[in-house]
Amino acid sequence: MRNASDRSLPKGSIGAKIRKIDPTILMLIVLVIVFSAIFPDRFLTPLNFSSILGQFVTIIVFALGPSMVATIGSMDLSYVGIWMLGGILVWRLIPVVGAPAILVYPLLGLATGFLIGVIQVKVKMPSFILTLSLLVAYSGLTAILSGGYPRIVRGYDFLAARLIPYVPTTLFWSIPLIIVAIFLMKNTKLGAYLYAIGSNEEGARLAGINVEKYKILTFTISGLLTGFGSIVQFKHLGGSVPIALNLNNMTLPLVAIVFGGTLLSGGSGGPDRTVLGTLAFVTLYRGLFITLLPPEILQLVVGLLLVLAIVASSRGLKGVSIT
Image (tube, rainbow, N blue to C red):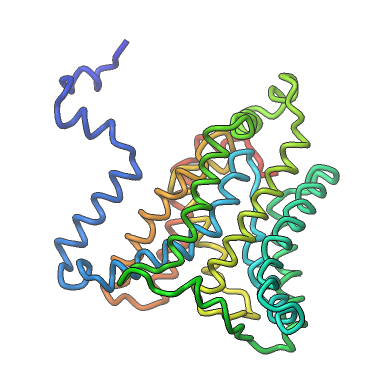
């Protein structure tokens, strides 16, 4: 039976059609219209379009794997650590093995994800603490192996060679990762099991799902996606290997995940939602950026957006701990 608000909107009316639009897509449309109207000479430019796509790549390659982990009610913050440590290992190995050194990224991501999954399942250590600790450890190890200086790795220019004006080539490298992540969640048994575990872990166990196995598999896949995404990110940022943690690199993927509507309590969302959330967030961020707000204000806005996005999904978080 329809409620009163449903009856107040005739079938086929504009209001009824708007209510059917995905909230994140609607937000994206509104943001584009607002910023285009207020700052047409700054927002509607090829350079700004290129910046939006570039920032989209920067965020999405780190958000895909963790968005899968979020569907089981866990968190994975290891992506920045994999990127940093993997980069310095590439710098160390390239004089020895040559171009194949870049493969250390997915190998490191795979091993890290598997390690996190095993520890989380066997020790029952909260995934937030576990992955954050590993991130800090990888950051410290990166600084040691680099000798305390940022490093630049030459080569791999084909990864970023411009094919289309104002469109970063790394965007095309990120698309296969997006397709794979969405396919796994929406078209395989794995995705169905992950949603079941996130919705009701004990119920999933009683239904015959090997919860521990699929938790380990989820973290492993997350690490592998981060590893391949780090290759994209590596060349997208000019082959640089940082030695200091950047708060934005850690928080922006989280903002994109919750911005897309993925509940951190699990059972919903996933990579497809994160793609939309990332597009909406980078559009908002670039719109605020062209207003020439100070960097400190932008940092404040990012923090507030993360808080508000989590609060907006608070009904899904009530009584649930992130494990």
